[in-house]
Length: 438
Image (cartoon, rainbow, N blue to C red; front, side):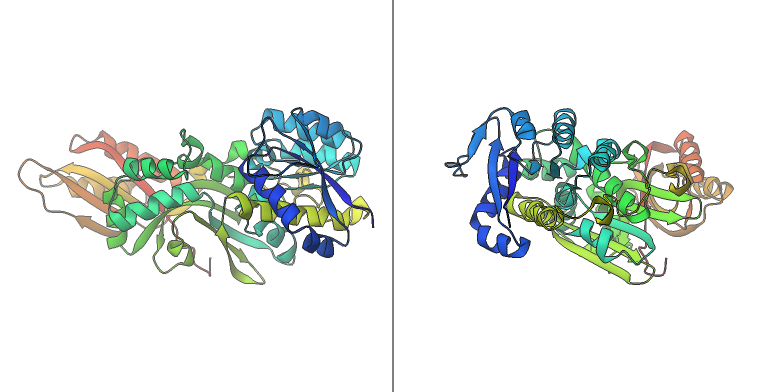
């Protein structure tokens, strides 16, 4: 069969890895695809010294690749929002299939891109956009196709997981471990997307859309970072039998879909609690299959390239298949039909348990006032830890609550912070059991 001709845009870490895997494993890939997959052209602002591009056309104009009539599939690995969107839309306009590792692009512009691709009858594949080399997109979209997905929870940002792992194992402060992660190349010079949950929210938006057949709605995702987590919080969570992880969580309920990224206490015995360092893991609960877990390298040159090339294999196999017989981009047909779209629930309607840490003046009656405020909001306490204080010190009070609605907890915290005997803001971390019976 004729080869599938590929144009790679972006020759950085992932682009270079993809180039190397395609050239190194060309024979194996051709056997799997039933036809050769060849690199016809590369578009990159600069050369990658680790890639031997001799014998391949190289251009500094990535849009030349999108318009090249000799190319069947454009591989977008430049990252970002605007230029990547323009590049992909140009490629679709010229009738090219697209493979991308760009989670921000799909989460923010995916609805528009898939609509354009559907009109042109071309494939847009994006396995590498979530969790690097872990094939969770294909598993959700195809392997779990018989299931009604009940909930999904994942460690989908390696930087945040690295930081929390070392805070727990070594009792270090957030700022100290972040600096180490930056020195090792795990965190960017500006780590905002990672530590504030934006990167994870991009990925969770995609996973939720595939799990429940709802439109991509990144702007509705709740995001909260880990910068306020202290070594004290990590220690107290451990004392209570929990581990703190930065999780993306989505759950389907009768009234809508939860879509949230935040620090979370989870029981130590859960598999997600034992995912360490820069690794990623996603737990999925299906009504038929029960719990499944997807674990592995969530980033890196060749792990991500593994997913990119897997998408190219799928394109090569399906390139001659009629559009109506292909797996839908987001697993469900008619995702953007209003009748099929469950709403994304506002965060104040979420129900979960809570860990609270507050600093109180050491005098009689303070704890009673705290308990009264919580009780007035219908919040019951499961556990309390109160440390001894030396004269003149503030006393840390740790509370673990039963499940309650977020808006009630927000009001309780507002009242607690207004008390004269409570110093500074109240630390609040949500608690999830991730019980297989939920």
